[in-house]
Length: 506
Image 1 (cartoon, rainbow, N blue to C red):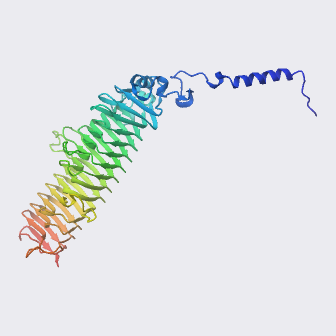
Image 2: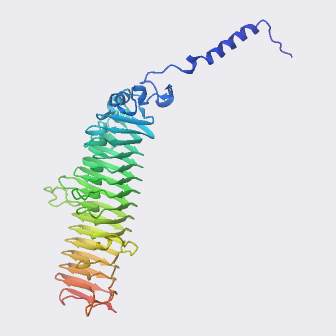
Image 3: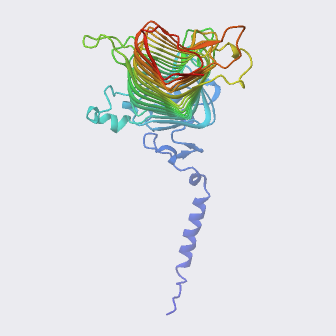
């Protein structure tokens, strides 16, 4: 069947087509109506090429001269949720407060093209929630899940323009996620205060700040991950936890360098100080990081953990711990690894060098387990003052610990390559101690301990008529077993202090 068009309908069709074409090219069609900010959903609604949450829609200029504080705060307070920073420099003169309960879910993002310059004291961004409990699901109020969970800050640079300007501060948050940030020339990069839970920092560059890179400041915080970050040249320390109630810190795959200053107080690339708190910091994993520099700073350390939380009636002596330090590269400080008053620390597969005072300093600790660590002096690193590094290993006033597979070479200008002093119930086995000044292994006032299966020698040329070092020396102590070692000198010990058997001297 053939269908014929009705010639009487053609004029009306042509009219409709003409109207449609006219509307399509009109200015009105090019600029659709803008929804209210509270109804917009991120970049789904645009006006003049700007996303609904773009700070410029709220009056921000982004030229580095105008004060954009009010405009950015309006954007946050609008409730649009996804706040975007177009390419530019945004100068602010007061903290931008993200009140999660009031404004709901928030993500601040810049894709790496925007910089905030904080020209006043305080944090550039302060994120505030209402969660002041644990991460137990039963401890959450509905408002946390309905309005506050997982605040995001991503792809943003924050630079300080005031001596007391800081980067980001968080209190009362759940699932705070900070990623791809550039934080520089501030007091502190990130400060975690009061109470937070389940924090993630990833792919951040926290560089050249006067204070701390990531500061756990007397905070109650369990579950935090710091991964794939560069945290360097922060004068007050790299990652620092002071007091508070902190558990489950994971530091992985980071480069932590020179987070200390020759003009500042003693600090560390990773500093955990439990003093002044009933709970302290424990349950920490530091894995796969390069942690280095700098030796001119006073008492500088790559990792320093001071584990003595405040005593209680039930526990007159508290040693925090349950720490794992695995697969790290550590060098060029006064003390590479310093543990004091810790309990339960596993140290495995790390490389240490250029410990100007000590590669390892372990004081008043228990349940320390070490296996397969390398403490070398590589001739490749022969420049500047590197020859001043002593590299010694000291265990002092420790108990109930296992030390296995230490490879120690070329400890200079110290009484011993490995000094074990005032310790009890130490099991030291299968270690290699080579070419050290003074004594290879010195057991000083040690009791109920065992040394077995070690290779201890000094094959450097003798100086005059004297050998350079003694393999093993025992001073004081009791109930020692020294057996089955390969040595280059006889054990220097009084007959009544140690049981000697099976040692080969060649």
